[in-house]
Structures are given as structure tokens and as C-alpha cells.
Image 1 (cartoon, rainbow, N blue to C red):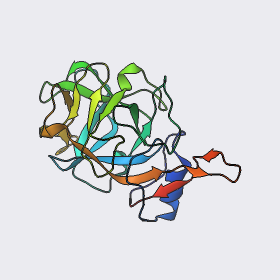
Image 2: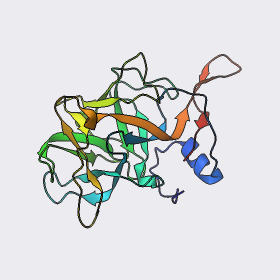
Image 3: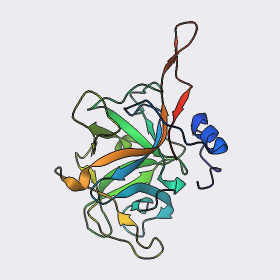
Length: 224
């Protein structure tokens, strides 16, 4: 496990607790929930969605988003959150068709897209934007899946709410300083390149308090 220090202040206490304990526990949850901290695997290319404090040298100049083959890298954790206009309670299942934000845990910036061209393929650039989890409406993505809620075992798509493009990887690789990492971009139209699956992380679950009110503070851990 990589160093678990230095996360943004909005980071879930559950994630910090898991880092400190170093536990790898199973989970009975079969779906993804609000407040979960997860890694997302591109099914076609077998790389995880990743970001870091490295900016694009072209396009927007914002923080770059890539795909990496490394499983253990802590820069591949993303927090599943509601939008600024539609918050979701921690532990509630993400519905198919729901619009969410994905916030990069280590830098506090949101998965973002816009009409700049990506540096390698000239598709639509995907970046990380904002500060401490707050950016703008271009940080919003709609979860496309086949049932009622986002199932963990299901390959899903993320459609950018403002441009309708889908979060994708087509295999282009960067050179230095991020040698071997894959370009992440957005493309119109579904394909195998735009399928993602939830992998390692902390999946939050709701639980009933003795007073009968929902208590969303208890995490349900899975492997890191």
C-alpha cells in the first residue's frame, strides 16, 4: 500500500482508518454507493483511472488524467460524490442514469472535460479540475449502466453531462515524465474503450442507528 498521508481535507475518515489499519476485508455490498472511495478499471485496456500533480503541456494546461497498469498506486483513488446541485447521502446506491462527480482523493480535483483536444489522440481532453473537491458544472458525469443501480461487477460508462462524450482510453502512451501511462480522453459514441469497472476501495454502506435514523458514517471495507 502506498503512503496514505497527505489527502485532502474532504477525504472520508473511513479511508484514513483503512489506511492506518492496513486491512483487507471482504464486503457484502454488490453495488457502488455515494461516499465510496474506489479505483476504476478500464476493462478493454486493463488500466486504472489515475491522476497526479502533473499538468498538461498543451490544451487546458490543467492537471492530467491518465491510465496506469499499477494496481497499488494511491493516486488512482477517486471519491464518488453528488453534484453541487444534487447531493447524495453517504452509503446510498448510485442509480443508473444518476449524475455524479469523481474527485481525485490525493489532489482534491474533480474528473473534468471540455472542448480542448487531448494531447496524443486529439479526442476531447479529460483533466482534473477545481480545489478541495469544488470545481464547476464540467465536473459532472452520468453513470450509464443496465439495471437500477451501479453494480460493482458491471462494466459501466461515464458520459460527460455537458458534452455527451464518454470517458475512454484507446491505448496511446505518454513518454516522459509519465512514461508508459495511457491517455484518458472523452469520445462520442459507445465502444469497448469506454467500459469501466469499480475495483479496489472503501464502499460505504448505510446502517440504522438505535433512534431509527440513517447513519451513513460506517464504512464497509474491501481490499486495497
